[in-house]
Length: 168
Image (tube, rainbow, N blue to C red; front, side, top):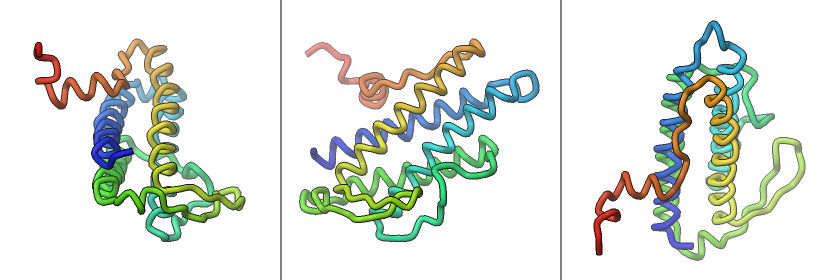
């Protein structure tokens, strides 16, 4: 896979993460407190897993003992944190050589089980993982009559590069 495509996928991820958090923030914090909390926790889970795999790719300790935090963050705090991580992923994906993408990294999962994946596999895991959980958040938003953002790569490309919609 090319680093250009990976960067584009992570740009899409950054944009859609932000759109989802803006939509989640519209869930009534009093009348729908449980749904709001679950939606925030799902988005936080995406973020924590992103941070864990970023640390694996850097060769750093991540400091997490689970794939979510005990506390539920405020939406604005989570938006800032996810944006920061998404930016790191965009930049990281753009710097990698084919040899670095194919590099196998040994790490330990939060359940203390060993793991080994290439950087490319880790990056693609984060793309699929986020999409999967945003789908669950979309279901929560739908129950609240809040339109879920369109989590489609094509929709992102057409917004980011409107000339793609022009006739050839």
